[in-house]
Image (cartoon, rainbow, N blue to C red):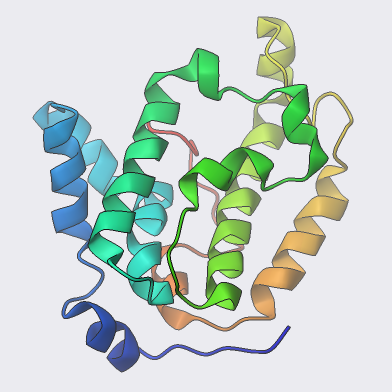
Amino acid sequence: MGHTTVTRALVEERTGTAYEWNRTARLVADAFRFTPDETERLLANPIARLIGSLPFIVGAEDPDRTAVVNLSAFVMSCRAESVADPRPSDDAYVTRRLELLGNFIGGDPDLIRRGMNLIALWMLEDYRRDTAEDLIAGKYNPVGAGVWDYTEEKERLIREIEEVACPEMDEVIQPTGHWIESFWMA
């Protein structure tokens, strides 16, 4: 896998603006008839921002369309938990559950993989943090079930993320450091 670096100028050339995040988020919020408070939570959620920004960062074709579709899938996963919650079928590999959020036509495959691994890293951290709560609630959790070794998977994801430099993606969310309170939109 090669090392790819994307500059802000390249991102702006591909998008015409810096990610079109506000426009994308507001389109999705309007489509889902979010309240003003829900819209603000969406705008503030770094995972949602990464999902909505990724098509622009990676240079996907029709990035605005891709961003709206992928962000809408994320919002649905937050609202339709009974369908979106983890299942044993997701155990095959860490990013399996995220595939519905990662539909791209074109774009840099290294950057797409980096972005999806970054989302997976934060999801993995959410699983670790929720292990006890999920056990009490009877909710399936692959980290809590011992299917995935948290430390091993975390180290692998960070290593793969660090293989591909992308400052623009790092501006949205960091692969290490302060973990957000919730992966999902509360």
